[in-house]
Image (cartoon, rainbow, N blue to C red; front, side, top):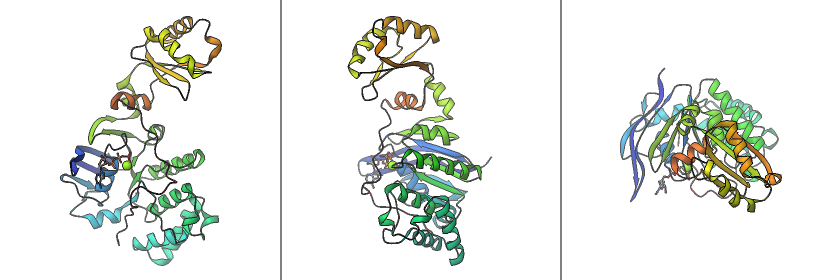
Length: 333
Ligand SMILES: Nc1ncnc2c1ncn2[C@@H]1O[C@H](COP(=O)(O)OP(=O)(O)OP(=O)(O)O)[C@@H](O)[C@H]1O
Ligand SMILES: [Mg+2]
C-alpha cells in the first residue's frame, strides 16, 4: 500500500516555542489517521504545514507524492482542508459560499453550482441555502465549512477538530459522513480532542505532546499498551468519594482517579470479578449510595491520561468568535 502522506523530521519553531520537534508519520492511501494530543501539542501546526499554509524549519512532507513546499500549488489542488476555525464568508449565502470555493478550485460554473447543491443537501443545509452565513448557528457554519472542503472531491482531506462545537446529533451525522468518505477511498487526517471520535473513525492514531510523537498504533494497540482493567464506580453524592478512595486504595494498581462532577471513581485493577466482589465488601454499608459499578477495559481517555499525564481537555466552544484567523485552501488564493 502506498502512503498518501509522508512526514519526516518536521521541526517548527515560533520564537522561543518549539511547536514541532521532529515529527514523523505516514498515512496509507485510503486510510484515516487520528492525530491526537493535548492543547498546544502541535496538531494544527502539522496540519498547516501539510496544507501548505506554513513552512517547516526542518524536515519534509509529501502529500500524494508531492512536496508541500516545492509543489505547493499541486498539493493545494489535491487536498481539502477544514481548519480549526470556521472559514465561511459571513456575507455570502450558504450556496454562494460553496460555489465560490468551487470556482476557486477552478470548477466550471455549472459544475460548481451542481456540486454546491449536492453538498447542501448532504449537510442538511437546503433550507438555509439562501441565507447569509452570518445568520447560521455555530453547528451550521461548521457543516458549511466541511462541505466547502469537499467541493473539489479531494483525494486527501484534512479535518482539524471537525466536530468541535457540534451537538451530539450533528456529531453523529458528521461521523457517518467521514466514514463514508473514507469508505469511498479518501485519505483523511483528522485531529480531535474527542477520543471516542478517534476510536470510531481512525484506522491508526498518532499521539503527540509538546511537538513530539509519544505513541502510535491502532486503538487496540494503544489500549493494550495501557493494559489491565478499570474498576469504575459512580455514587449518588460526590462527598462520598474520598472515603471510598481510602477503602479501595489497597486494591488499586495506581492512585484512584476521582471525577467529582461525574461523581465517579476509577482505578486500574487486576483480578476480574473477584476484585469487584472484594471492592463491594470493602464498601460495606455504603453500597446503597452506589449508582453504578463495574469493570471495564481501558478506553482511549485512559490511554491519553497515561501517556500525557493529563486528561484530554475540553475543547473550546466553536460558537464563539474565532481566536485565530480563519483559513481556507483554494488553489486560486
Ligand atoms: N503563529 C504562531 N505564533 C506563535 N506560536 C504559535 C503559532 N502557532 C502555534 N504556536 C504555538 O505552537 C504550539 C503548538 O500549537 P498548535 O496550534 O499546533 O497546537 P494544537 O495541538 O493544535 O492545540 P489545540 O488543541 O489547542 O488546537 C503552541 O505552543 C502554540 O502556542
Ligand atoms: Mg489546534
